[in-house]
Image (cartoon, one colour):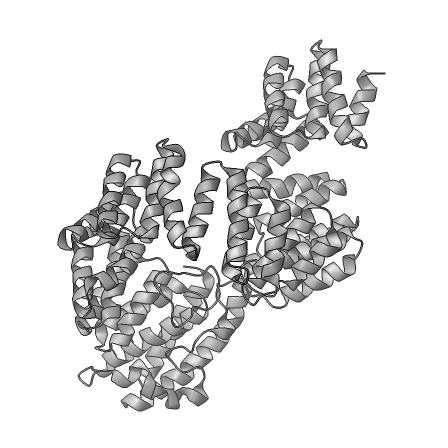
Amino acid sequence: MDTTESKLIVKLDTLRRVSRGISGGAGQIAAWVVLAGIASTGLSACSSAGGASAPVPADVEVTNVPATTDGANSPGLLVADSASSSLNALSDSPFGNIQPRLSLREESDLVFNILTAEIAGRLGLVDVASEKYFDASIATQDPRVSERAVKLAIYGQNLQRAALASSRWVELVPDNIEAWQHRAQVLIQLEEVDMAIAAIEQMLELTGEEPGAVIPSLVDSILQQSSAGVGKQLLEELAARYPDNAETQFGIGQFAMSAGERELAGQAFERALAIDPDNIETILARARLQLNTGEGDRALDAVTEYLSRSPDDLSAQLGYARLLIESGKVERAADQLEVIQTTFPEDAVALYTIGLLALDIQRIGSAEKYLTSVAALDQHQDSANFYLGRISDSRSDYHEAIGRYLEVQGGEHYLSAQIRAAELLGLVGEVDEGRSLLAKLRSTVDDPSVSVQLINAESLLLNSDNLYEESLQLLTDGIEQYNEDPALLYTRALVAEKLDRRELFEADLKKVIELQPDNSHALNALGYFLVNRYERLTEAEEYLVRAHNISPEDAAITDSLGWLFYKLGRYADSLVLLKKAYAELPDPEIAAHLGEVLWVSGDQAEALKVWEGALRDAPDHDLLNNVMKKYNR
């Protein structure tokens, strides 16, 4: 239990004891709300200092658990937000349904649990909120408390508690479809097949519709939330009960494909198409299976035949394009993207999707055309501008890229776009403007991990203008504020090296390694530093071997270990690693190392070949030029 959590429990437990001295249900509840407001206010500062998570929304859902939430825009909580509004809120709160048979102590405990849960939710203490709502759900007949307990447990990924809370919820409202739906989804994720099937049966019975109207969304849920084995078992149970449903057969085929059971998948898809021959999802899935089994163009015949009858089916057109890309038919895929643009010239979803597909196949000009069209429409504008920014960025057209990134006003790419815009402002000599942008972002975020990311970005911006002292101070302040955050320590180490602050460089990296023993980048940086600056080769070997064991495919780490072996006189081992590193990453520093080891090993011709090839791409690289002067005078 962290400091904020323990302070919350202690303070509210004190309030519970105080409240027991106040008689009368309504009076006690009102006192509780006033006292809880004091508790919440008293804890808000410690939550900010301690880096608590963002508040939990009141309407958290089962399937989409967000990485962050915006407390300012969250729906209202079940308890009153302040003492002044508390009495008006009671009619809509679970307190209004506290059972008359509860004793004063039981009533006090119930209110304590709900208030603790709500305040914990505001502070981002999801597990505390979930636990206390679950405790409250046992004591009250109000199904809203059980519902909240279920959703909070799912939000906090405590599925065992969610299963128990959902049992209470369906007990209180056995005719509530949503309650059974949540229970079924939790049991699916827990892989409790028999209980999940029972919950699904109850849900289907309550819908009052034909099962065929409900099963498609159910199959989607099973496909998204189940492992292959359990999902296939669930769908086979459903298929046995509803043998004429194509969706269940489709789902069985999908799971069989993911498990590598191609024959079983083909049989399931054929059964699905026998029931519903025009189901495009199944047609595409069967074509993908047939392509994977080497049937070539014949696998696409059913798709093209469907498209000849239904050219306006966007999902079919996009599915066909994806199949062409997956099967390596890049030119035909590019032609298909043009067909989609012509057929759906004003459809933002279609244009955005083909823009991303064009990027996947390196048709940058086409991608730019499609995404520019999206940016002029009223959907996906932010994402389109983000990718247009990346295209300009890759061309070193930094001013155009900055403009595109700054057009991103929301969505999943917002933060990345703003940070990159700030970095590019530094590259074009507008460091102050970049810092102002980052400062504005820092003033609007509460998430400590985002704040750390922004501090790192500002440090890089200062470094780009050789303002290393300012960068060091910025990082030092951040490290103090965010309790020796490893990312900030790592960045400060790199800045300390620029300032020749060797002791600080070494201390920061050792602290990172203490906090994150498997941080291969920190191990590599420290090991390489010890090789080059101090010749502490035995100590360096410990770090670099660990780094290489953790990240054996990282070319920079492979280069460092190869360079160490050279310093140890192990030339043959060194060459094996340096050749591997250079093949994976033709970097001028690796070329300098490889050339030197080749030269001292007697292969001067190959050394010159490596150096001269690297020099063509990086003519001004200091290390490369220096090593060539040293050996090829």
